Length: 173
Image 1 (cartoon, one colour):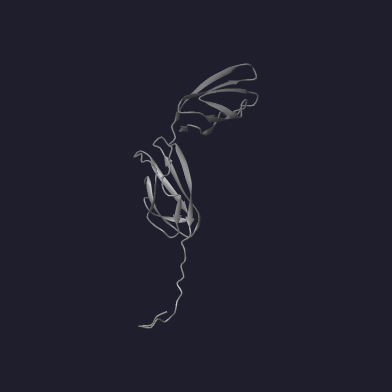
Image 2: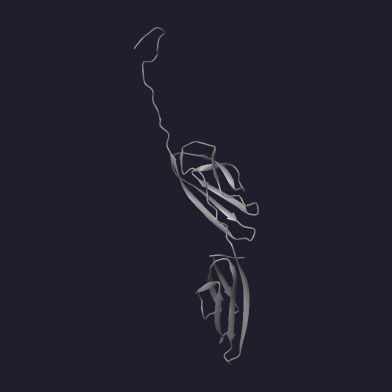
């Protein structure tokens, strides 16, 4: 598919002595103008076209129009705590569920306990430090978007109780 705001390459066979003139609607040529291969930066969702006029050294030319549909990309927004305590589980991260789409999650600094392949996961965080949660949402049209949030995994206090030991029954102080 051609996805909105993506970059794609289009080519035609190279023929010595021929010239190539490309025009694009719905996007812009970012590289290769005047060659047999162009790179296109696509814009927003909608129709687009690529037109190529190829001319021979003898002045004969031919034009071909290639129609494209610029498809919408998913727009996941991860919801969940961005500051958590180390070694805690039950931390839920989610994005809006679209039943036609697929979801692929990854976590650094923790482990996914449940929800792989769904729009929500449950995470157990590990030791204190920097962590992250990422989701790649892929639409039925094949277009995908990856969203990542940073998570701070905070250390827990480490209390140390001191006092007399052993304590005898009936003693004070």
